[in-house]
Image (cartoon, rainbow over all chains, first blue to last red; front, side):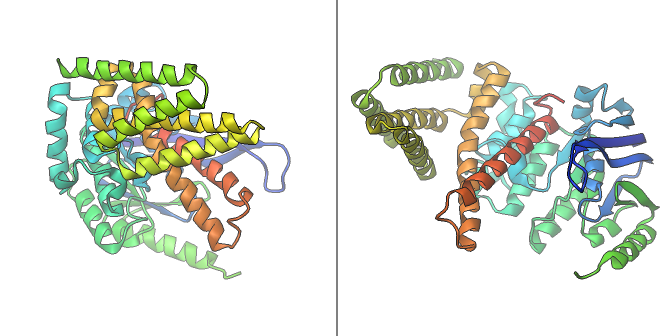
Length: 239
Length: 172
């Protein structure tokens, strides 16, 4: 369960016309309780949907209001929240920290698994994602899809109860997009996905539409995606 | 010898070698250090990409030093950097990062491993930025790619920090 209670994110930034920095609102206030197993967040570039995902995942603290994941406050119980929430980024190159796939999964397992058991457990996770034969190759030689699967394996190795994905398939071709979508669909965890892929969003149980830092639609996929399409059609003015 | 003891031994050798390279100045000492490191790298099979990165990094540091007016200092600096980077690469090639992390204090070990991982990533960032400058016909002016490359490197460092936090390995 992810709960945002009047959560707002602000930042210091220069105003559009230039001049001294001032406080600008990036998101919110947002109040939602997300209990569904599959939730999608859609919105235009720069609308605040990634900020919403980071807020829900505890990577960004609310400037005001509160965010709770599994009843844990992301501002006051950040360490405990980290044990419950996995976060998958758009670009796996930003997420993968170790030179080889095996070592990257081992890095995740340092939090949960005794040293003697880590390598075997990591190999098991790689095997589940079809990457066992790539365990010892340099990460940079993997394809984009393999890297994203590896990032997912590294996140899931600590068995989080909630997974938040920020545009996990944006950089992937159709084949790997299908693979990653199907892996995500089969997970037992609650999954919140930020996406531009409206077909993937349509498979969620609930869709939030974010626009200009606010949740402007929230409900079943057909209704919310319909609202989003109308919103974008009205905005699509060729310069 | 146990694996942690063997890793500690390798670290001690690396530390002693690095100290000698840094503390004994001059082209002859630098050349000796680089020769030892190159030989060790050849024996341990350091990846070709690491060789390239080490040489590029050494040449850049050496050129920067020579630019300040003392060419011999530039050559010595380049040899020192080549020796240090290759010696570090030898340790990494022969030691799983997890063992290094177990041996060093957590934050220090993670910083060391991330630094080593960042070398090819930084090289890729510079290559991508230069390619973008080349596509616009302005790769000869280093200003067109140095500044964007530096900004991208900072952005990558930020993303790495966020990835660490997401894995529960950094500050929240």
